[in-house]
Image (cartoon, rainbow, N blue to C red; front, side):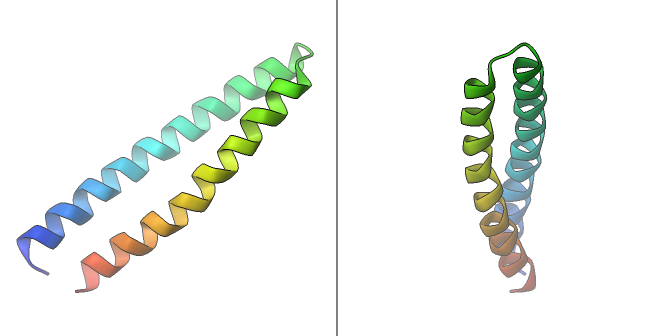
Length: 69
């Protein structure tokens, strides 16, 4: 793997770690909101988190490709 691919993979991996942390925080806030009766807001947050989950697998695949090239 060349330096450019390694740097790109490292940057993507850090972004994915940040995305995972944000997902966890949003999920926890959503749960807190749901417990206080705002089920609609919770449902909206969970729907948005599905996009993060979908994109995380694509990012992981891109990192794998960069690291194996």
